[in-house]
Length: 421
Ligand SMILES: *Cc1c(COP(=O)(O)O)cnc(C)c1O
Image 1 (cartoon, rainbow, N blue to C red):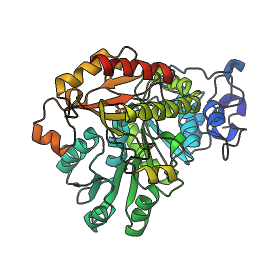
Image 2: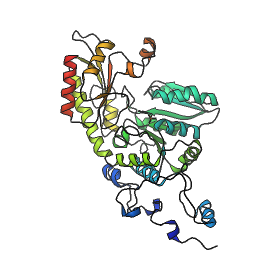
Image 3: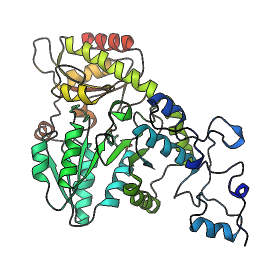
Image 4: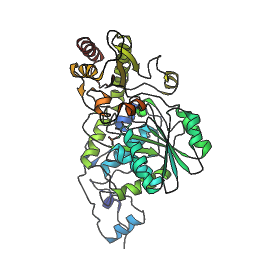
């Protein structure tokens, strides 16, 4: 049977393949990469934007083209659970932004975490976390991975000796976030990667809060970077997605398992993410500027007992952050006090939350709209005071996820709320 001609595969609605990418992504600045990386220069219909391929399946011209596809003569799509052309654009863009070889996109950050760990961990192996990691990530390991015979340990965040001591011959993975949420602890990424290399364990950084704009974990030698793309990468509080970035060799099993688990994005959602990513670097500049300006304002305010923000000289991890990060992001946590200096109780703290007019009250972070919340109420209401103390979540803690509004407006709004509450 004659080989299909190129035009059979590369018609107007063909998949833009990596080989067609004329723009080398290495060395590009984050804004140029956000706008252009991963995209074909010429697109179907000569459109400047990528089309949304709302397809659950892909058809073959004839039997020989199926055989060619299976024998990997012609990479192309087959079925929606295994890939979509728009999803591949986003994956290439995210890989370029992170400086990684491959990215695998999931339907949420948690989907990405579960997919990565399930693909790499087997019964009898162990995983060690720094304890300030996202509570659902740790819950997955503690309650679910253990059911499959995978051991789970936690050590105090940034206690590198404790992390080393927890590693056994069965340990496969060490995991951290940086900065952590809501305490904004900053992991020394080089030290973390070095532990992994020396001890022969895989390293994973959940870099949702720093983003590739502020930190480059793969360059420091970390094996996997994970993001809840729901946050800064999507950036508009209008989608959920997750991604893991790393080497193709280590991510092929993750991609294969995703095809079985089915935690994929709809083509429309992938397009929303691509659209959001266009302004990623611009937005991060503003998030960083707003974070620093608001943190500095709060630090001087008499009603504020303590501010957690790695850009402040007073932050315990400021030196590490200043050495490793480009900026410090839009998340600012602070503790409220009364005029007499005593800690505010939870109801007084709630008054500040209820008095602000610009930030909306809600969980999440990383979108253009500022959000405000009281962790004790939003995430720890059903915990006992002792448990909250163990998690270091006092009643007077407020978490601000700053958006891209003007910092002067945010500051005057917060100042007024602090005065009236
Ligand atoms: C939100 C978040 C997650 C979970 O991501 P989803 O997209 O909500 O599933 C994981 N890690 C961190 C640090 C997050 O902020």
